[in-house]
Length: 133
Image (cartoon, rainbow, N blue to C red; front, side, top):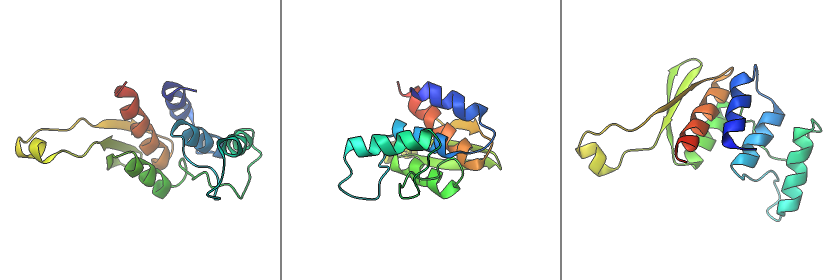
C-alpha cells in the first residue's frame, strides 16, 4: 500500500477504524506490539489480524483515526507541528528554522478535512509526506 492509497481510503472513511489504524501503523513502520522483543514477523502478523478485523487487544496499534491524542503524537513523531483550522479541518507544517523566522518566511502547510478530527490530522500528515516525494 502506498501513501496515496491510504490518503484515498482516509478521505472516503466515514469513521475511524482499527483497520485504518493498522494501515497507518504499517505506512509509518510503527511498532504494533508492547513487548520490546517483537520481531518484524510478529508485528506483521498482528497488523494483518487487525486489518482482517481480528483485533488483538494485547497489541498496541494506536487509535490514530479515533484518538486526537494518538494522531497528535504521530504528527510530532514525524517532526511536524499542527494547527486546528475548524472542528474537522487540520493542517501540519514543519517548524521554521531560526534563519527562516528571521527572514519572516512562511512554511508550507498541508491541510485536510476528515470524518473525525483525528482522521483530518492523519490526512494532513500523509499529504505532507506525499508532497516530499
